[in-house]
Amino acid sequence: PIMENLLDIKIMKQYYRQKGGRDKMKKICEILIVVAAISLIVGVVSRLIVEPIMGIEAQAFLQFAQTCLLFAVALAAREWMIAKGK
Image (cartoon, rainbow, N blue to C red):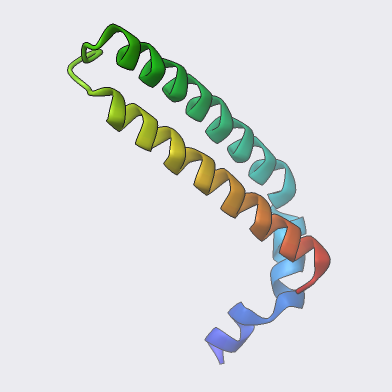
């Protein structure tokens, strides 16, 4: 019964609205996008100067930027699905 309640979209929407989930989710997405942009810039600079920055290779910065953007898209899609009620 507990899992059925967790999966019930109506209960999820009520909880989501109660806790101010939309604003929190937006802030998290914005933070992830900013962090990804900074990581991307640092990765490109590291690649151009052909030297690790703080001992971290350019590839790691670029992969971290990819991961941040992936999470931002996933969270935005989740919020969109909850708002649509599916």
